[in-house]
Structure formats: structure tokens, C-alpha cells
Length: 126
Image (cartoon, rainbow, N blue to C red):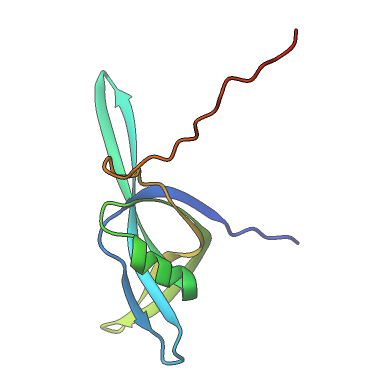
């Protein structure tokens, strides 16, 4: 039977990505993304923010560490992964998104030059 484990998120980073190396020497970056949902109820705007933990491995982790910062708007595509650990004799579960692709959605700073192409008007025959 086919299976699908795919997540797509757009949100803002809650803090700077933190990276580390595994004992095998692989680099992994961790960061959290805030996804806020807004709606109106009885002429009152309400909102709810969901925090999602993301980990990016290898080159994707390096790029995350280099270019993302707190407040960055990002599109994350990945898969869900649940880990478990023991805390004071109790088993706890931790769900995260393992990033497979990232796209930075921040706008360019106003002082960054905008590239434009000057074109002459084309002459068309009617």
C-alpha cells in the first residue's frame, strides 16, 4: 500500500538556527518556525500560532545556518519524524519536520539595487 509523509509550511523563524555535528561528522541545523492562523469571530480578529521544530541535514543545514536568522520568512518542505526519549523514567515523544527543501521568502532590503533591463519599443506590422 502506498504511503505519503510530506509537510509544507510557510512561517517565520523563532530564533537563529543552531547547528551541531553528529558523532559520525554529519552537520544538522535545528530551528523553529511559527505559523500563525488568523480569523474573525463576532467582529473580533483572533489568532493562533503553531510552533514547529525543523531539522535540516548536510548542505541544507549549512545553508540554513548561513542565510536564515530570527524573523526570516521561509517555506519548508519535508517529512514528519517522531523521536522518543526518557525523562525521569517517563517516555516522551517529540515530533519535528525533517527538511527536504527550503525557500527563503524574505523581501530584498530597500537599499539593495534592483536590476532592470532597458528595452526599446518593438516595431510591429499590423
